[in-house]
Image 1 (cartoon, one colour):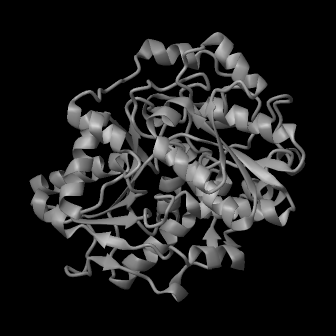
Image 2 (cartoon, rainbow, N blue to C red):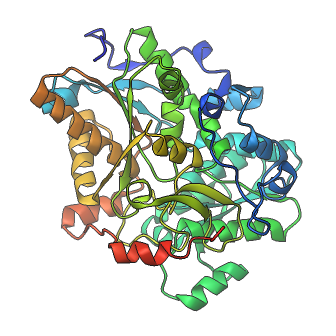
Length: 458
């Protein structure tokens, strides 16, 4: 157990000059590197040239770079960051009191920007490299809508066209998130749609499908290839995204270091892995170097449990099977979460970086049902005064569980979790929770087996 100063401010704000000037590449310190992306046609590792047909050239280079420890953040991105960063690290004194726990609970709040989440950290970076390359625009997918919102903001700032394929069930459930994207000039299309060949094929097989991130990724990639001057960008999973999101962990570590606090446990929600990967990056480096015994805990929805019930194997990163294959924990690219799943975290796989760390037992994982998640969200809102996003509330639920264990054992652990964003665009889900119509949906072993039996045979 770590020692820590007993009294710290409610909010620890770094000065602007303490903001990270470089992103940290966790892969450089990993003992076992993530397996390479494979070309779906040849089965061979993707080259920079091949990736550059899908991603911006510099992003393709970042995707493949396992060796450079620190990547300087371009000045234009730093200036954009300064509009909402550094973000605060908050000591959850009121929640601690409510739980009557000796644990010290901290959360890194990433919701203090219009997109309402951490997604803007990578959106501005990817849009910047697209603009630098002279492109006309970018295409992408979005689940809960946070990534699409963030990218639309970044593209508006840089004068880029933005086309967003939004998972159909979210398009219907989250109309206000959709309208924010349109306010920033993005074209928002419910996925699967009849605007792409892969969308039409999916609809022909299942016309009533609620959609999935895998479907939306396929459509966005196809759309980017169909028009000159466009590239595809992704809000999670990829190595380049976790690189950009390391700014979260670097700020968190700097804030804790100011008060001599060493975390015992770091918790993050996990869908594709961008928030969790960014939050834990510098702390995991210490663990890999043998300088720390901090625990790291990924929290995923029981309705889409890729780490806890998936398999570690090469799989397609999209439902249409046109994107590179990644070695990751996966439920199968055909897996579609139940439509009553109210948050994001809908992706069938997990970041190759986090998958490798989980496989090597540096990372733990737990899956939680959504009604318990919303109970935790409500408890947090009533004590800490912030309405959390459903995604973030997975981490809140588990942080509360861990703090209650500390009450039982008397351990004064330092618990840190990522509050990835706000829930003000998720009030329809909160309404369903309060009305008692929000239900838990957990896939059966048979459901997962049907999806997993379609994994590519390499």
